[in-house]
Image (cartoon, rainbow, N blue to C red; front, side, top):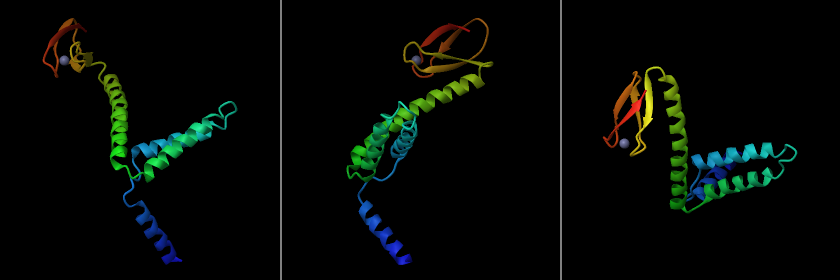
Length: 138
Ligand SMILES: [Zn+2]
């Protein structure tokens, strides 16, 4: 029995050779699929079952795909997208933590956010990215 499982394991390893496998996007698609599947049980939301199935099929197709370059590009785009969202949330968290000691201003030229000490009155801010200066009232 033990060797039977070992054989199955070797066969699956051989079958997966050259295929993409799992990544963050596949995991997210599986989670989305599961959530949509649970939501589809609510009366009136039955159509979510189709979306759940689509997300699951997309996840499976990605997992067993041999087009590694395409899958890596999809992963990079997904990580860029989630990185932007995570960055926004971490900035909001820092803003809340620093709200009594620092102010955050966006540079009008390059849109970079600069953190400056919270002082009373007008302040001249030098952008940390493009070195241009702009004034703000704090
Ligand atoms: Zn700037």
